[in-house]
Amino acid sequence: MPRKKITSQRRKQILEGFFECLARGGHEQITIKDIANAANVSYGVMHYYFKSKKEIVFAFVEDYVSQQEEILRGLVAPDDPSWERLKKTLLFLVEKFIFDQKVDRVFLNLYQMASNDEDIRRCMKNSYKHFRKAIRDIIEYGILQGEFARVNPEKSALLFVGCMEGLFLQVAMDPALSSKKAIFDLLCEIASLQLDPKKRTIVD
Image 1 (tube, helix red, strand yellow):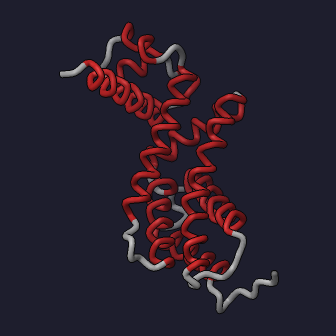
Image 2 (image 1 turned 45 degrees about the horizontal axis):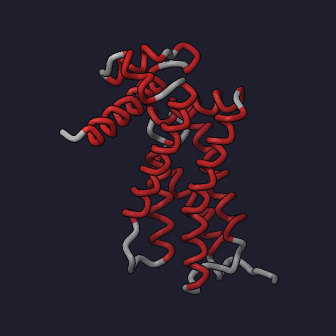
């Protein structure tokens, strides 16, 4: 097997191991050795790929966001109307970021790390930009197609991500709070109030 492919696989293993460690426990107790064990690689190999746990955090967030962006792009068909694009995106985000308990634990750990480290905070801040852009692009498309009200796409994307973030935190604290369907329906209701031209009067 080519060395480049082996290197890529090892790196992927390490990042998956890091995900499993964060999903199981608090980030403070996680060591490089723990990540190596979870990744099924030798401790000595770890430093060939990453010099510190912080470097693993950066790589993990970048790779994870990139993977989710690719999935989001694949959800939408070229002939999908704007409302269908938005609903598919919201449903994916509800299932992946609000009701996936492993992902919830991982991101709660990352948020705590970001609150104590400026470099990780910048990394997480950049990840939010990508998710806002995914929603903003759909809103801009809907406006161009005449399906959405002429809202400010950036502000509307901020609203949706903010709503999902708040719902994520509440469900993470109380998983029995609501169901996937109820949360999805709530977000669709917000989308309708925000974007339906029949329900919004936009003054330029």
